[in-house]
Amino acid sequence: MSFISQFWLQLLEVVRHLGPVEVIDVAVVTFILYQLLRLLRGTQGIQILVGLILLAVVGVLSTTFNLILLSWLFRNATFFIIIAVIVMFQPELRRAFDQLGRIGHIGRPLSRFNTRQYNQAISEAIRATERLSMKKTGALIAFEREVGLEDYAATGVRINGEISAEMLQSIFYPNSPLHDGAVIVRGDRIVAAGCLLPLPEEGTVRER
Image 1 (cartoon, helix red, strand yellow):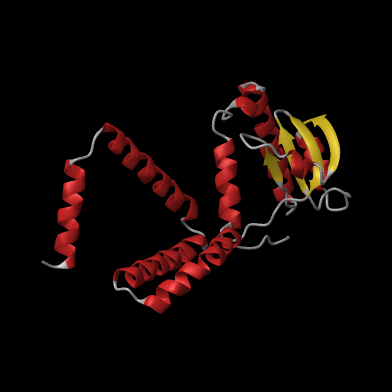
Image 2 (cartoon, helix red, strand yellow; image 1 turned 90 degrees about the horizontal axis):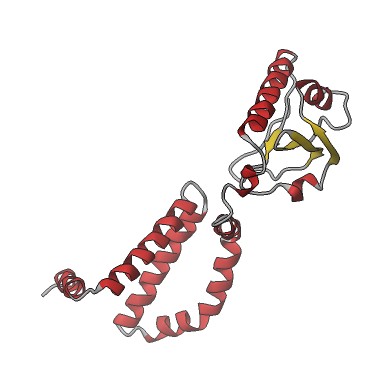
């Protein structure tokens, strides 16, 4: 009997004896793996994950076929592999914990402000950007939603003023001392201006 046939027979035997608890266990693991792949999709982390899977396959084969030297190497390198994984997946891990922290808190920051306030803020931002675009002037505006932006607001100048198209235009006017950073909006108020935001890993921001 081939290895593949034996594997499928063992898998069918396991499935046949699954109880409710085991089904829940499989469902949870499947969900975690799905979320992991979804988190890594489109990032360099997916390539690292493929490499780690291949490394794990080699480790299993070394144990199965009793490759003593290779098995010894894997056993002694386990700690360093774990540290390397944490370092390489640091951005993805930060994003995963950030999303985990949203559980049970989704909608709370938004609930402090009504729909009218958000619609008003967005309308003012649209009016401002339309006017700025006519003068070929850029604007960077971040609206706070599920995830708080207080850390980024702390890098700029506090304003705490009601949002308006005129205020946004004055902030992003080329000779303004605050035009070279981002504006952070919370509800219908401008929290801060001239804030520093992290650059995306996939590319760069071009200044015009």
